[in-house]
Image (cartoon, rainbow, N blue to C red; front, side, top):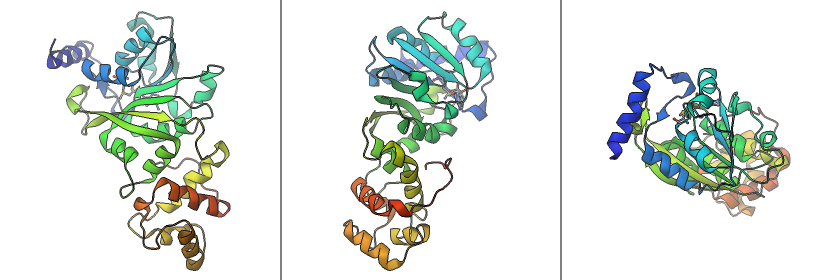
Length: 291
Ligand code: SAM
């Protein structure tokens, strides 16, 4: 069957069931079997895999995951969907469905004494950044993250010095992200306004930033990227209540020129700055967005 035919057939199922997607929950359902296969291939799944899937929806991806993996733990916020999901998928006994907000879920608790797990999903786009931050900093980290999200967010995750943002630095401190494929709006129902991307992140099991430092490192980046178009010394001086002279000396010590803007620093620059300035970082809100 051609690609177009597969998408049309899946879209017809939605029409016949008179299902109304909830826009506010980021419900853009995947229809395209070729894209689903690319997600599965990117995850290199085996019968030993334990998976956490965010937002199973109507189970288009979940169904394929349960056919290969040992166990799938699917977290869905929408009770209407999670109630009907097991029956729709033929009640597979390797599927656990939790009806809850994945942003408030402790992934380490779900995994308990399993050695390894993979984190997957066609993410609800409104919650993609908080979910990525949450899973990258969870105590028990997945070995890999294979997700679909907005292309623009994916491009920021993989950006290199010159174009880096808080999201790029934070993601790359905790893992190695790659864009696997770009995905057109026509692959979904309803169609999102923007292109999407499949991203794989190989997660570092022992990142440079320790469990204890994660929040202060995040807050430090938040300060550093506060005025991204201005030279970095301005943001550091204001955010850390320091003198121009102190900041000048510290930048110099880290091999960073006084005129550099935050987007131009590399990961080593950020890490060495953080190590020197760690004790000066104020306590800030825990729930700030990555962007
Ligand atoms: N996996 C399905 C697919 O690919 O067709 C659905 C993907 S859809 C982009 C996102 C799914 O995440 C929806 O089913 C939505 O109800 C669910 N969702 C939205 N916000 C959520 C949250 N905070 N926690 C868990 N699930 C959420």
